[in-house]
Length: 69
Image (cartoon, rainbow, N blue to C red; front, top):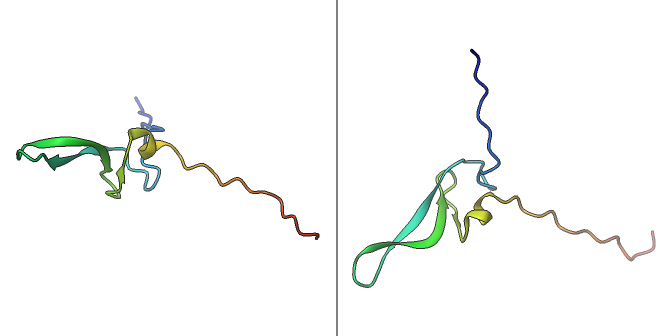
């Protein structure tokens, strides 16, 4: 039986990696705790939300030139 490669839309918008890690930091009392941010396991960029990690960037809205052509 042939298998189909698994595809997901949930991947890093920068590098295409399909996994991330929670960013951990030390609290003032010395314990490790999650900061609420996420780090891509591919490019290592840090994102504020999971949506920011996977959601494609919006294309810029272009306006027609106002100069006579």
